Length: 381
Image 1 (cartoon, one colour):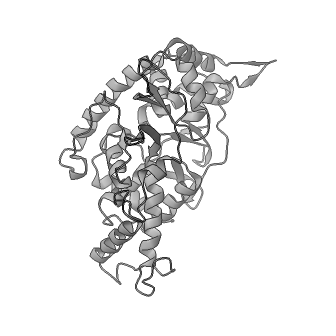
Image 2 (cartoon, rainbow, N blue to C red):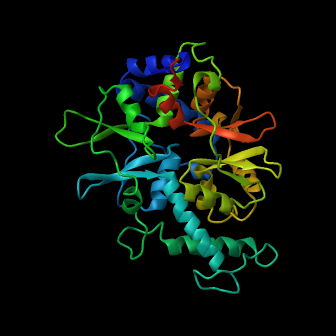
Image 3 (cartoon, rainbow, N blue to C red):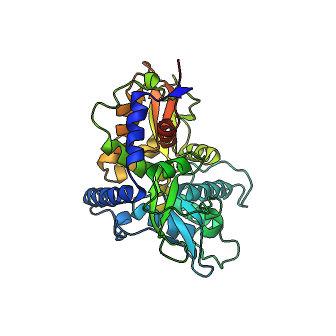
């Protein structure tokens, strides 16, 4: 027999007391606040000048969009994923995620390397041109050519084009749409599945499934954190049964940004740790960091070391409060409250846990928190 810790029970009390609709209302208000804050920080930034959709509307990607158009729509609205709808077939294809564009750009970068001076044919290995060998303008041109070769900005009818439909089909939507009246507990149970980050909320009064809202792991954790009474989560993670010790996927700070993004893509993770030669945590990188390399077509080189790349990205973009955490981490004696509130505040999918020497010993993700809520973790005595 198992029992819930005080912290797990406090979180469960919230989950059992609210519906999907109440989380949606909270999320709409939060999105409006985040959007206004981000726009204030990004004044004058041309990459964010497109008008985002109203925070109360559902972001839906047209299956006829190119992957680059779809990714740009997500970036403009400060979200990580959205459903793809095929109007001709009158059906939802699946979820398009920012990590999908990461796969495309990684492939394009490999083509960029292959378009070097000695071996101009795509697919052949070559040394990457250095700054002394060719100028930056040529580097940008080559990366642009590589992106074009991958056809991530070509319409679906173009031969060889990578389509949003193809990418979204890898993330199928659940066959059952939940409604605003659905319990938050039922939604959480769905989100414990691996690679299941979002649930569509439909309208029960319509004859066919229509997505009227999206509940993500991040929106749910933010909602739960806002409803927990102060002091109810003051147990340390180990005492409460919040399991954080696991293998940490990390990359050396001397590795290139391209290598970091390849690792992210191959592991299908939202973020990885960056460590120095002593194994100490010095930064983190996530799929959203690919945005600058895509939108400026090579001005931000993916071949600089990952820390220099991240410094370039964060220097070129005004940062909001959410972005002011180059290395979001907690120590292994942190309380559940500290971890939950940090994840809710930053909107990051995971925070790394470090020991007294700043070496990563574990990680806590959205999924870990939701599992902690609905699955008792402390064996009975």
